[in-house]
Amino acid sequence: MTTLETDPTTGAGATFDSLDPGTGEVVGTYPVQDAEAVAETVERARAAAKWWSGLSFAQRRTHLDAWAGVLTRRIAQLAEVMHAETGKPHSDAQLEAVMAIGHLAWAAKNAPKVLGRKRVPSGLEMIDHAASVEYLPLGVVGVIGPWNYPVFTPMGSIAYALAAGNAVVFKPSEFTPGVGAWLVDAFAQVVPEHPVLQLVTGLGPTGEALCRSGVDKLAFTGSTATGKKVMAACADTLTPVVIEAGGKDALLVDADADLDAAADAALWSGMSNAGQTCVGTERVYVHERVYEPFLAKLVALAEGVRAGTDPEAKIGPMTMPTQSGVVRSHVLDAIKRGGRAVVGGPDAVGDKLVQPTILVDVPEDSIAVTEETFGPTLTVARVRDMDEAIERTNASRYGLGSAVFSKRRGAELARRIRSGMTAVNSVIAFAAIPSLPFGGVGQSGFGRIHGPDGLKEFAYSKAVARRRMPALMALTSFTRTAKTDKILTTIATLRHGRG
Image (cartoon, rainbow, N blue to C red; front, side, top):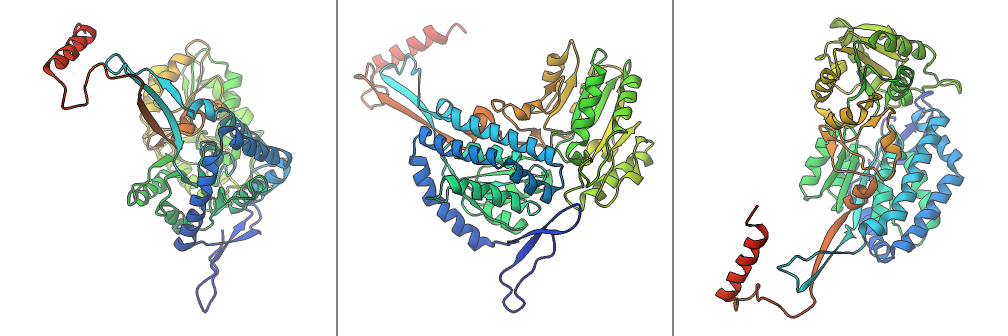
């Protein structure tokens, strides 16, 4: 991203450039939309929301399936835009797009089952009533997306919000505005009549304007620090938020783990997308009985992976220019505190490219262990048993994702980890399963996208109690008698008094 450009006489017409992180070349130029422009976009979305919410689930699914078809047929083009703005290899970009399309299709198909009207028991005391609940659209949902996964991550909110019957205003990261524009333009091809999905572009103030614009809910993905600012801005209008913030995910390797699979998974989870994955592995805790052989396998695999801008490179450049400095500071602190780099090290951290780095003997209070690095690095620690591994894992203020490799105790260990999601004998698998909720605890945020929880996140529950027969007892009336009170307490005593 370059410096803002404005009209020198009026100060109007501010724009910003999207840059190729590998070459620095300008990919595209986009407007910086101010609070007034954002408010106008949200107002248009309100009118579109009335039309969109008035459609049946089946009608909305037809449109969303058509959008999925466009994304699928043009996936190579979408991957090219992603590659140009993030630097990630085309193969990774296509994988990201395929996963996002899967979520879009799932949300469109399952919205009626999850959100549609259902009868529920009314209870003995209210047997003269029928009860039902359904989940209705909120109206307009604002989505602020990240730059590291500019399709998959925001689509986890956009697709589910649309399937629930909302209109959406999407602000992509200032590093990936072209990806956001591409997605919105593709949707307009299948729903040209109303601006159900709209784009706003700009920097931080544009995102703040969206928070304060009166949207009915705001979904944000980004750093924990920025998430706190989003919450503060939304608080002024009592706008509810979904926050997916930082992570410091751990991978546990038990004594009986498949070490080849564990090493391969740890390396990919930690290094793919240049380590810029919110649910990517950053810490590895290995049972002392298998620590040495695991580390040897991990190092051997890492030596065959490099970062570059050529088609053969498995890792691309860092997308955000300042992130290399963060990675460098974490590596230097780890080594200063007594850690060792068995792969890479400080010299592996360039301005644009960061080569894989594996650190061992790093103290648990080093920032390389406590803070989100967001680069292609791993800290690997020896533990006496899995109890110690879980204790160290749960000591983090973050709690987004995690992974466990164990043949016998995988499920048990997974349940003991304080995180929103855990993969057993794999990594990041939960993100690719549309029926599973996605989100964290602690400083990793709250709320859920994906799955039934994700659909309900963008709807409100509507409860209806309908009288279906004459009242057996006048409970909600000043004509209620002492006899009625006695009957009511007798029923309650018979049902609950022996508890």
